[in-house]
Length: 220
Image (cartoon, rainbow, N blue to C red; front, side, top):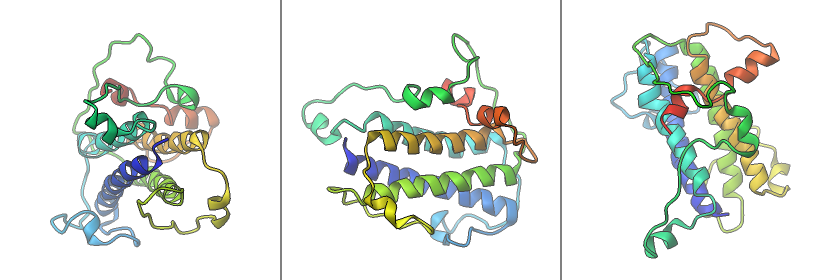
C-alpha cells in the first residue's frame, strides 16, 4: 500500500470537499462553518444565502470530489513516481464496485444505457449540507489516521472528538476500504437526497440513498 501517496491525494480531496461544504453552508445559512476560515472558499465568494442548482452541485462540486476519491483508491498500490520514471502504467479509474463497495451499486443499473439529466432545479440545501458535513468528518478522520502511519509525511489536523486509542489500533487495506465506503456513502446521500426536505429513516430507504447515483456511474 502506498500510504504516503494516498494520504497526499486524499488531503487534496478533503480540501475540495471542505470548500464545497463551506459554499453550501454559505448558501443555506449565510455564513461559514465555525471551524472554517475565509481561506477555505476564497475571498471572492460572497457569504450570502442563495439557491444552488443541481447542475452547480454536481459539476462544480461533487464530481471532482468523486474523481479525487476514485484516483486515490485506484492507485493505492501503485507507486506513481516509479511508474512515471519507467514509462507509465495503465490503470482504470472509476468508483470502486468490488468488495464492500458492491453494496453501493444499484441493482437496476446493470446493462442499462442511460444519459443523466442534470438541470437547473434548486437543491434542498439543509439536506445536502447535513450529508456533506458527515462526509467532511469521515474524510478528515481518515486523513488524520493516515498521517499517523509510519512513513507518511503528510500532516493532518486531529479532528475534534477523535478517539486517541484509534491511533494504536492496526490499520490495513480492509480498514481503509471500510472508511472509504462510508465516505462514498455520505457523498451518494448528498446527491440522492438533494430534493428531499427531511430524512426518511426506514432501513431500506437509507440504504437506497447511500447507493451510487446513476449520474456518477455514467461519468466513470
